[in-house]
Image 1 (cartoon, helix red, strand yellow):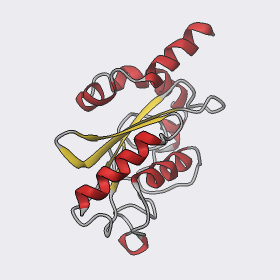
Image 2: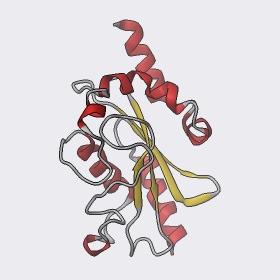
Image 3: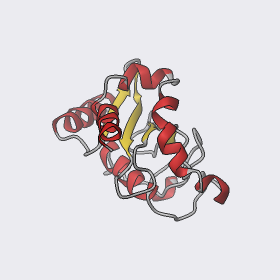
Image 4: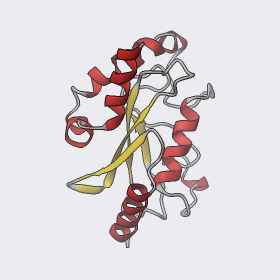
Length: 166
């Protein structure tokens, strides 16, 4: 049941992608998903490309995932579980109707808020957000999973084109 559900979610994401975001499971483990999303132009994250992970438990969709942002960003601690109402921090509020798509959309929306939660950075790191945005692609390119899954992605190319035209 788990594999069929995840294959369907992947087909749906490929058919109707999340804007400015690419989502893929690891080839060797369909329960481990990675995603990259582009920082919005009207934010201090502009020019950034942020990789995250969703690790789904064996009991998915009846148990919540672990969610992280891997790329340093000034909002969340890199590679640290983030406390969200739909993450493994709060199994009591988990809804089996949620999908990888809805979780990523929720995380991206929360990324642009200033609401504090477990996994957030301190105020000093928050001031470094533009620096993290500028260096995000370079950081991602040091990460094996990024290279394996996203090295030839259109989001990175879009950011390079934008920088050249400025």
